[in-house]
Image 1 (cartoon, rainbow, N blue to C red):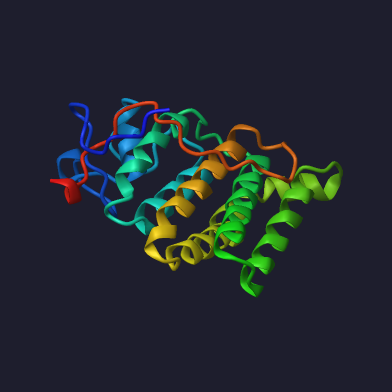
Image 2 (tube, rainbow, N blue to C red):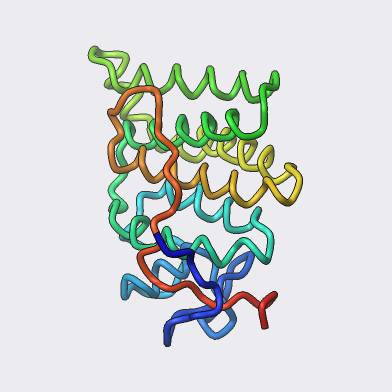
Amino acid sequence: MPTPDARSAPEGLPLLRAGAHLTPEDGACLMEYVSVLAGKPFNDHPACTDPTLATVARLVNDASTDAGRPLLATFAPQLAETGSAPDARRTAAVVRATVLAATAAAGDSRRLRRLLRGAEQRYDLVTSDGRLAGLARRLDTLHRYGTGRRRLELSVLALRDLPKPQRDPALRSALAAAIAAAHTPTRSLIVDVPGPAPTLPVPRSPMSA
């Protein structure tokens, strides 16, 4: 499998940078990049991506180093294929997969154990049957922008604090796990963490200029 070449940017696609941007000429975060790739209006909440997965992508984008960020573009096609319709099972699966990947990469800690326990309990609840599960699914918005988002933020923060040689690979693995969970939200608890599939060229990094 060929290694992605950060110096071979296709015409018309912006450079990946941290933060939000007004126009593609200013650069783009990963989700803004996805919006351009998918032919959507330029923004970091494109309608082609699940909102919880988009949150993971934005967090990973900003936590990556300048040298490692361009490689995130290889995930763009997969990010563009989940759709933005909210789904409580998918929300819970993405959060759980992200926390699990962070725990595997950043090492065992009390905080990550607590985050993983909560994420697994939420997933077990919304994927079960019964009145309580139905109520939990109807309250998905509260979870997505509350407890679920907080678990994602703390998990990515743990990866951002890793030494630089470990940080970017760990962040890419977490994003890969989140994407896999979004595409198959009712798979078993053990989520495979595949490497990114280099399906298109990635934008040139400022570090290589």
